[in-house]
Structure formats: C-alpha cells, structure tokens
Amino acid sequence: MVKISGKAKLLQIYIGESDRYKGKPLYRAIVNLAKKEGLAGATVTRAILGFGANSRIHSANILRLSEDLPVMISIVDSEEYINKILPKLDEMVPEGLITVQDVDIIKYRPNPQSEKQ
Image (cartoon, rainbow, N blue to C red; front, side, top):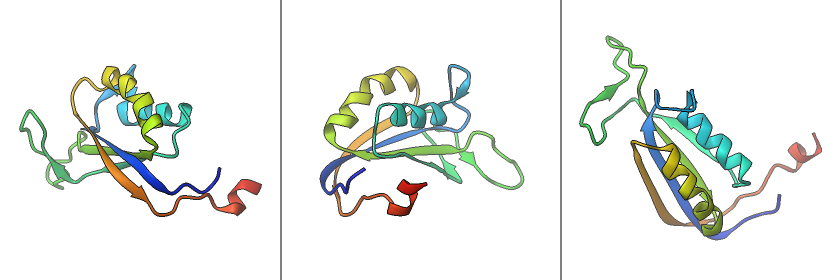
C-alpha cells in the first residue's frame, strides 16, 4: 500500500449494535464488505448514548445495561471506492443513517514493519 493524500470522502454509517445482516452483526458485515471491496480501512465506534429516527434512547447506563448501543462505522477513501459500496450498503442497512462528506487526507500510509510480517 502506498501513501494516500489529498481529496477523499468520509462515509459514516449510524446503526444499532444489535442490528443484523444475514444472522451476523451488521457492523461486522459492513467492515467485511469494505475489506473485500479493497477500501483503505474502516473503524467501528460504539457510543454510550444516542437516539435515532424512532426517538428511543439507547444508553450505557450501568443500571440498565443496553445491548443495543449506537454504533458508527467510519470509512475514508476515494469517491470511486465509496460510490462502489453505496448500493450494497443500501441493501444491507434497512434502518439507520448513512452520510458522505468531503475530507482532505493529510497522511495515510502503512507501518513499513507490518508489511514485512
């Protein structure tokens, strides 16, 4: 992998932790799709509090341990690669929010030591 810099797109997908796709966690299926399609990388962030279109609060309150916390998947890549997976995400994400924003990549390069392993 070479250094990438310049204009790119940030894709963010907001779903629930308990959402499923073909019996597996949806967030995992999305990361696997991104890897399979050759995107630069994906990060899943689990939130402690949030609500979505149904206005139901999801919380990590210790008194009521939620197993459906908000989850956000972030993917940064070229417009071409982001556009390539959008139709697949439309099928995979029946409920949630998907956004795309313009971003500038300052630095993205692998650790040279990890390539040798």
